[in-house]
Length: 443
Image 1 (cartoon, one colour):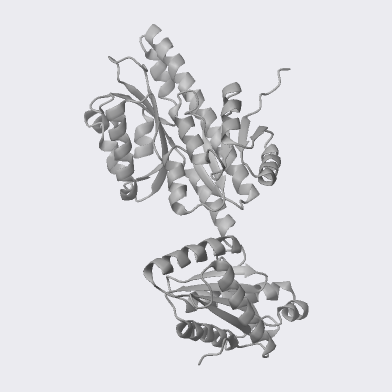
Image 2: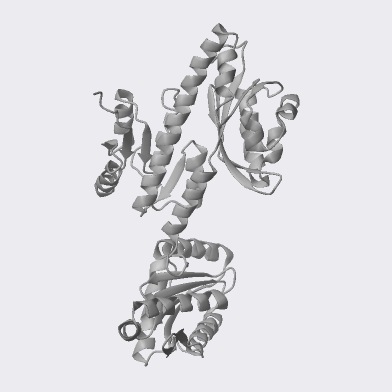
């Protein structure tokens, strides 16, 4: 029996520990995992054996991940290989840069194992399906020409993806299959008359980006182009996510500028990604953001506060004698107490504030543009609200109290670690003073 060929994935990272851990995790998908500790070494490996997917770190010496990705996307031999950035210490601008130069995804470290495995599996499946469609296109074109295009049309009219053939200047729609009407919810006849009417269904936030990509195609006539994923808003208000790729039917033939475009409904995939992203960034018990989000959010807010000359306050909140609640009433009561505290935090903070579960029975609240005096008032309001609202159990009430430590930028520090340390020190003072109080004391 012929062995099933494994997908080959190349992992590029100059950090040996990260490289080993990620390789071990990916191996669970039964992939052929290759590794490289530099971009230059990766280029040599890619020339020897073209991988099906590349997982790439941003920050590397000599040649960083962005430059490597740009080289791959500018080479016709490697431009179709999907690239996923997996990196720490990257801000939002670098994430956008990575996606704009051709990466299909960007995952921050520390990553959630289930999330990265799911994303790798999805992108490998999408690449495989795209290649199959491309092969089918070429095969069907030859067969169709031999059979007056009858077989080609019968095959394409049965697929669920939207398949269309359009001139390079988007002035003439040569063909569109019936799937267009079921996916877009609009008439194919209208599309044939006005080939760009499909853009009218795009969500307003996606129109500009997709139009720019289409204009680039008209101007440059590349052999292949992938549009960023975009949303369709149907007449009933429902939303679909669409992935679209285009291939020039006769590359290099100046007399034939026709493109074959394939558009696939990826709403299920997007929903799964959103669920995974939510689980990766939120505490499953309370629904608050988790500790992974805390440092990044506070660091970003410190930069914003520096730029605008604003203050920033942090509260660390700890449930007093939480172990006694678990021991006397059971862990379910403990979970209820944590959820009740999370509800109080959501109730007492503004829309621009953020609440996080820091770990165990500890929570952190970030208060942008709040002075020490204002932050202490918020902390005292939270403390009093918790004390005034006993936890209701089947066998009676449980009185819950909290201790709170407060720190403020810039007086207590100009980065996340300093602010957390000061707030934690004040929290310890609050416990030593008998708990159920806020430190420092309000003047």
